[in-house]
Image (cartoon, rainbow, N blue to C red; front, side):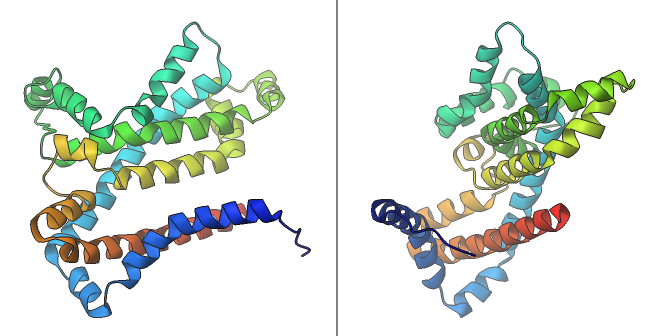
Length: 258
C-alpha cells in the first residue's frame, strides 16, 4: 500500500491532538501496579458497580433503539411543520449541563415529580434505583444514536424503497427489508456510541440515582473520600475493560461486514 506524505503542519496538529487524548489514558493505566489492579478486580464493590454500569448501559441502549430508530427514520424521510424544532429538541441533551439534566429528571421522575407518583403505583421507582440510572443514561446519550441513525437512513437510496413499495411491500416491510439492512453500519455506530456515552455518564445519574453506584459515581466517591490513590485503580480497570470491549465490538462489526 502506497502512503501519501502528510503536510507537516497537519501532521503536527494531528499528533498533538492524539497525544492530548491518549496521554491521560496511558498515564492512568500504567500508574497502577499489577497487584493493585488484581486487588481492584476482586473488590466486591467494584465488581458490582461494573456489572451495574454495563447492565444499565445495555438496557438504556436497548430502549433507545426501540424508541429512537422510528424517530430517526421520520427525521430522515418525512418533512413536517416544526421539524427543525424537533431536531433542536433531540440535540438538547448535548447542550445543557448534565447536572442540570439530573435536576430536571428528578423533577419529572422523582418520588415527588410529575410522573414519579404514577410510576410508584406500578411499583417502579427511579430515585436510587436501576430505573433511575437507565433514565439518566438514556437522556444524555440518545442524541448520538438518533443522529447517527438519521444520517444512515438519509443515505439510503429512496429509489430502492420506492421499488419495494411498487412491488407491494408495506412501510414496515420496506423498513426492515430494505432501509435498515442498507443503513445498519451507521445504526450500529450510533448504538455503540450511545452505549459508550451512557456508561460514562455521571452528572445526570448522580442526582437522580446516586445509589446503587455505577462506576463513574464510585470513582468520584473514592476520590472524594480517600483521595487520588483510591480512585486511580478503579479508573484504570474501567479504562482497560472499555478498551477491550471496543476492540471486540469493532472486530465483530468487521466480521459481520465481511
